[in-house]
Image (cartoon, rainbow, N blue to C red; front, side):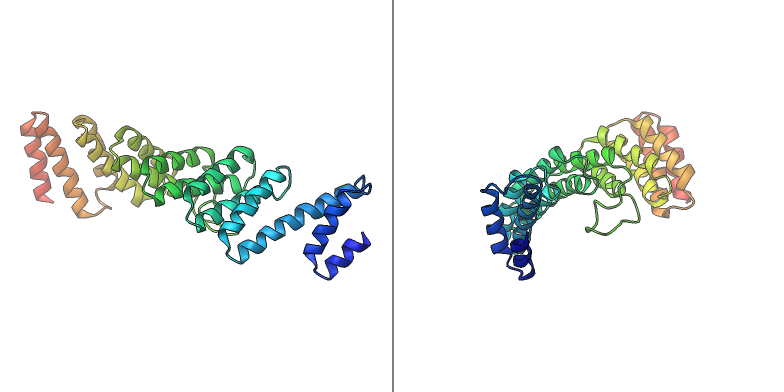
Length: 274
């Protein structure tokens, strides 16, 4: 203890680590000293990885953190090591390895209240960043399901979002599903958003309008009419005038396409009168 404490005071961390390894190979590596040696080994090992991270040697840092997590899976530092490894891989432009490392974090440390949701949101963001929108939508939806009330995963460590991160995740998922033509899932995401975040009137009004357009594109004209009419009754007076005109026109078009042309003309005339 005296020797190790002296090396710590001198900040000779490399020497302290080497001495720790030497002691672990002797008869001194027994209770209660063995626990102290393990604590030194794990703490110093993590520090050396941090040093590489601070030096922005991303490849070395990523490998170091990854090796650390493999060597000490039960360490209190292991989840942080995997997260730091994923960030380092990302900074080294190795997004595939970053995603793999984050998936490992999710599987092995799913109970970590901070890093597990952060990893899941980051995976969605990685796929988002490389325009693999189907995967991004899937992981955003997973995040919404698992962490509907999380306020930290979508902001920097130590920060807190005013709104649940699920709100942004669901917005992105719905937009991607719609853009990919995955209309059934897009509508589910839209409706879930309306249910989860009823106070976000601006977003809800746009989603309700967009759902009408989705149904129209699917030739589900009666469902489209229902959505557009719902939009008009709830947001017609408060929303943009142009969107209101578009809703009336869209209803007219739905009737026209359904061979209810006289009814369609009525809605076209209403649109012209606005």
